[in-house]
Image (tube, rainbow over all chains, first blue to last red; front, side, top):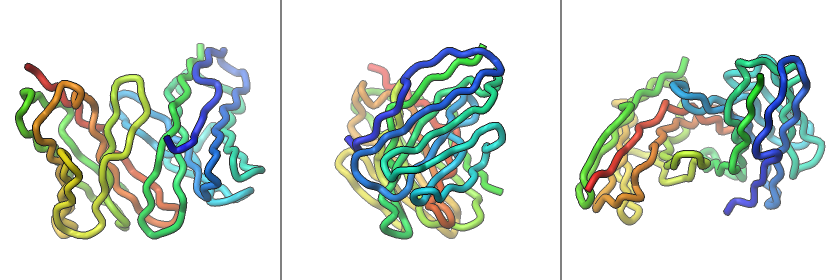
Length: 114
Length: 110
């Protein structure tokens, strides 16, 4: 157990509404990541953070923003949700102590945009 | 760009050995990771390779050839609980970002 929680675990929302997903870690790891997982595409990186207030874009960042105001929390926001953002969202963390660094995943959030 | 290929599906028999291959073409390379993912659950870490060769962890082994852009995951003494998706991922660049293949769905039969 890497001490990662995600909330909510399930959410159904309507097109055009804002949505915020939360990732919380208890082990003070430096790096945090947001992925989405869709059939036929595998896991794709949305955004990641390498410290408080330090974030960068991943492969599929359009339509998403992130914030990290505390080490333990990494928020993913869909400003105006679209049906194409229906997916399972996973948060991951890594210690950031070396060139090669294992990522550990949270339990996921299943988001449905109607 | 990044490209990672692995077979979509494989079937094997309980007690047997199965090898899941992964080939990659990426800009940069820090390491290659294997994860297991059961349906409806999060990926869980299995193994990683940085240098060429074989890494063994119990019933699971992973091999890497950096010059060939090739890795495989070997599962021995297959059990029904090994039925899952196996994800190959390459770690690159600053931020230790992972690029994943689409996963290999393994079905273990009696």
